Image (cartoon, rainbow, N blue to C red; front, top):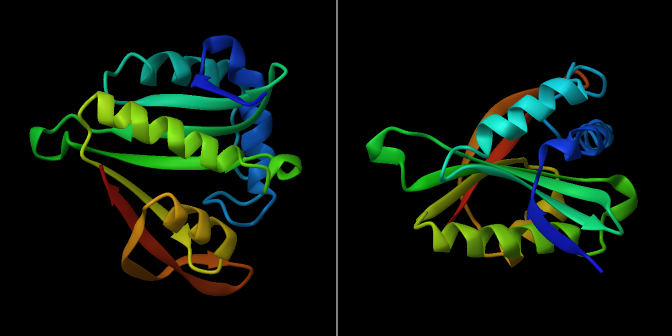
Length: 165
């Protein structure tokens, strides 16, 4: 059974493995192999971000195996304290199986409980599967970041999306 929960330090190596796998999709900010992150460094990141009241790292697990993650990053300035930026990654073997939906459902409810008003994300404009999921979860496209990324010799647009909760 799929379970979503806040990440703990001992999850670090599995989350790093999912991050590296997700980067192979070509739809993440970092190119495959570009990000140099160790389980030890990510364990410190989990500890640090989870200390913040309105930030966190969440994982979707099945039989103690992490299938996906969501990072929710809130900033401290008072004028933007009502919002958070989210990043999601799902292992290639788990895509299309409800992992992303489960993560969003959990995080949106958590965000409501802690009085966040808005969640933001960016997505490569050609990532139709992700865009469809985000729209299904209630996100709307707010704008286009033209030529935002340079991938395989071409400039690519990103959509800026958000949900008000």
